[in-house]
Amino acid sequence: MDPTLNSMASEGLDDPARDRLIDPARDRLIDPARDRLIDANLDRAREGLRVLEDWARFGLDRRDLVVRTKDMRQRLGRLHRDAYKFARHTATDPAAGLGHPAQAERRSPSAVVGANAGRVQEALRVLEEFGRSSDPELAEEASTLRYLLYDLEVDLLQACRLAATGGEGRREALAHCRLYLVTSPVADLEGVVAAALGAGVRLVQYRAKEAAGLDDLQKLGQARALRQLCAAHGALFLVNDRIDIALAVEADGVHLGQGDLPPVVARQLLGPDRLIGRSTHALAQLQQAVTDGCDYVGVGPVHATPTKPGREPVGLDYVRQAAAASPIPFFAIGGVEASNLAAVRAAGADRVAVVRAITEAVDPAAATAALLQALEGCP
Image (cartoon, rainbow, N blue to C red; front, side, top):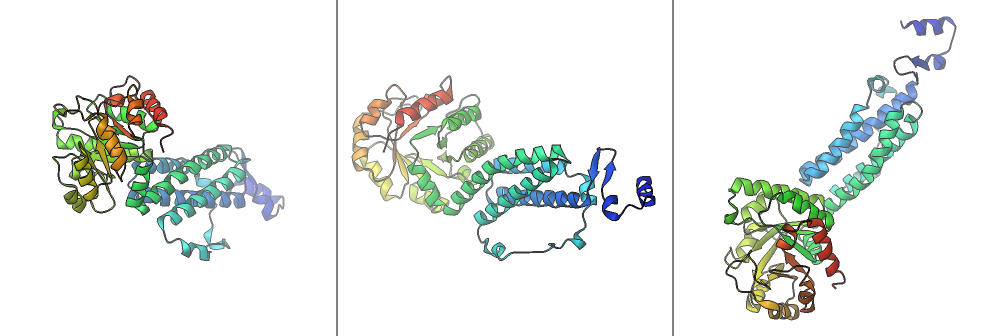
């Protein structure tokens, strides 16, 4: 028997007194009731985080959310000390197995996510309060994680909403996009796109033509990385031309040129919920895109651009025609940059797509911010 217990027993101390002993290794009072409480809430928080993590992984395919949730779970696990586990005594817990009718009402992933995020937040608050005097490290970590979880919960619920609404959610998001970034092969492509997303871009198209010298495996890797970046920022991600890659990375849709697969065929492959965009160079092509069920069109090239070699610019006249006739969102594209954006807007375009204006900018974030500021006030 522990010598301290022998000593206290010999002095005739009662059970409650023996329940409060000094732990020399950590210089704190051992309180079985408090340790059981802390153990229960650590279990509760870690279990709830695992629910969130698994839905982010298997339900949402959001690696960024998985990483954030796993980090929180591991940080709590590091502080789940053996002393707390040894204090566990489920058989005498009066609330073990206790349920509530509200649990049966969680019929959607969003309801499960919301309930478990709340469960974790409540457990963290308990850990913060009861750990403050006995385990300051745990209390401080619980406080930090609780505030991180507030933001994580919102991001998870937004992801659930987009997944649940499918095409409706994507089309609603598209309607609010004013600036469309089309990528080109540049050094540090991920860094450029991340900077643009951080500055406010919410629509990105991955475009890697044959001239880029990439094989399909490299293109798939780039598309997957950009898709994850867009997901982390709540942005739509499209793939140019390659329906196979779009499906492989679960992109939000594809953009098709006039020489690519017809939109009707693309819709058969993609299903009803993904977006389809179409490049157009004349009003008749725009009208055909509408007939084909496209969700948006590109209108251009407005100016001559090296990204479309040999393509004669259509100028601002076609932009004016599109503004007057297009029932779906259209993006003016082709040599659009901050210096000529005012003229493009005056012709009736309230949305623009750019390539070099961001990808070749010295500061992609600043270039993005300037374009978005110039687009403010569009209806």
